[in-house]
Length: 234
Image 1 (cartoon, rainbow, N blue to C red):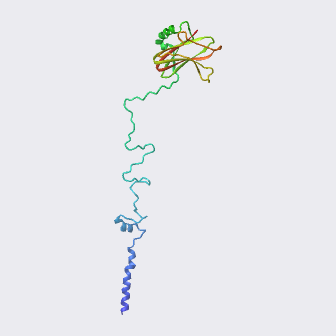
Image 2: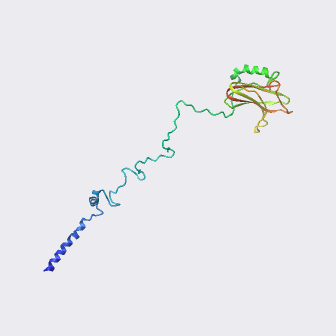
Image 3: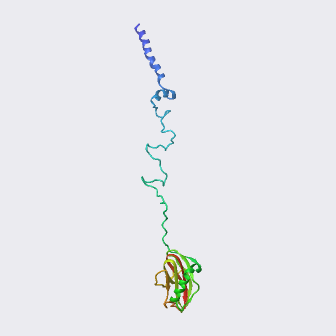
């Protein structure tokens, strides 16, 4: 009799264990996983509902709190650095005089200088005759104006120049044997001011060679304005 009572009791004790499998969540049933883990907001790794970061963000776009957006190349500025802004009414600094050729103009454009040129020639190059016509130009600081002519053997040459609005006028006679050969300075004036004479007062430049050749009378200006020149010969 005692044995028959123990057997049913043992069977009854095993029934909860056999039925206990129904309480184990099915890993393939999302509803059971949600009931077991969803209340705490936790999910097993790799299962449904695993946090993926902030809504709407794509991979690589997550930013740490307080982090500023990355700037494009060339847009970065040091903290506190302000972009340079033009000052209202400020004009850019003028470019320094870099030489070059003056703009040739008709001598009539420098008509105001003609009386001065005529008076200067009368006192500086008496007995000499004009070689060709006058030549004139509009100058910026450091620019030059060239007047080609041919030096004849045994002849003597002077150049008279007058400037309007300029500070200094310098005159040279240079030889140019060939286009690709550097010019050689044959004579230059020693006067100062806006008016100049090369070879005045009987000190004209005489060709020391028995042959002639190409040459140039060169006006060089400091300042800005008009200048006119005239070659004389005897």
